[in-house]
Length: 331
Image 1 (cartoon, helix red, strand yellow):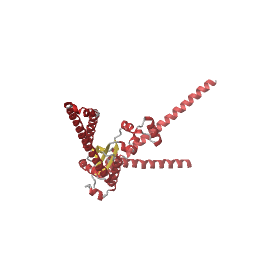
Image 2 (cartoon, helix red, strand yellow; image 1 turned 180 degrees about the vertical axis):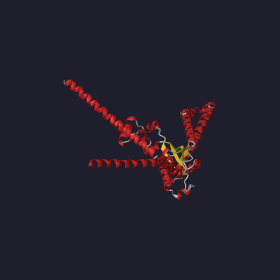
Image 3 (cartoon, rainbow, N blue to C red; image 1 turned 90 degrees about the horizontal axis):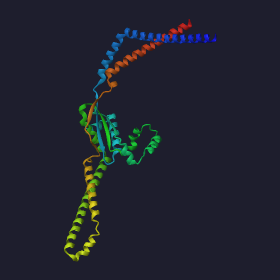
C-alpha cells in the first residue's frame, strides 16, 4: 500500500512540474506576442525615430578617419626620449596648441594629424639574451610587478631601451595627409637632447672609423717594412742578426688584427647609413580607412533613439502593472 502511495505522490509531483513548465512557456509566449503587437501597433513611431536618427547622424557624421602605420628605428639609444617626444606631440595635438601647430605647418582649425600612438616591436629572444634573464627569473618579475600578461610586461616602459624598432600609428584627417607625418619626425629629431646625442654619436662613430683606418695604414707600413728587411737580409749575410730580431715580430697577429679592424670598420660604415637621424622610418607608410561600426553615427543614433523609446515604454508598462497589482491587493 505504501508503495502505491509513493508512486501516486511521485506522479502528482511530476504533474505539478509539467504544469509549472507549461505556465512558464505560456507566459513567455504571451510576452513575445505582446512585444510583437507593440511593435506592429507603433511601427510608425519606430519608422519616424529611425528616419530622424539617420538624418541627424548624417549631419553629425563628418569625414572618416584614416590610420597610417610605419616601422621606425631609434638610434643612439634614444628610445625613452622618443616615447617622451611622442607623448608631448600628442598633448600638443589634443590641446590644439595654435603656436605649436602653426610652427610645424599644421592646420590649426582642422589638424591633419589627430593622434599618434607608438609601441615597441618586442623581440623577446633578443631581450632575454641581452638581459641574461631566464624563464624562471622572468616569471618572478611578472609576479612581483603583478602583470598578468608577459607581452604587456615586455612592451612596457621598463624595456623601451632594449628595442631598436617600434611601430607608429598615426590617425589622419584625410587619406592624402600622409606627407604630414614627416612633421612628427622633424619634431622628434629636433629635440635638443636628441640632437646633441646624435651629433656626439656621429662624431664618435666617424672618429672611430678614422682611427681604424690609421691603424690599418700603420699595420700595412710595418708589414711592408718587415718584408723589405727580409729581402735585404737575404741578400746580405751581415744583416743576419737584424733579420733574427725581425723574426720576433708577430706577423700573424698583425694580419689578424688588420682583418679585425677591416671588419669592424665595415660594420661601423654600414651603421652610419641609417644613422643620419635619431629616429628614421624603415618601412613604407601603410594607410587605411578607420571607421568602426559604432563610429557610424547614422547607424548609432537610430539605435539610441529606438532603444530609448523602448526603455521609456517599458518603464510605463512596469508602472501600470505595479499600479494594477497594488489596486488589486487593496480590493
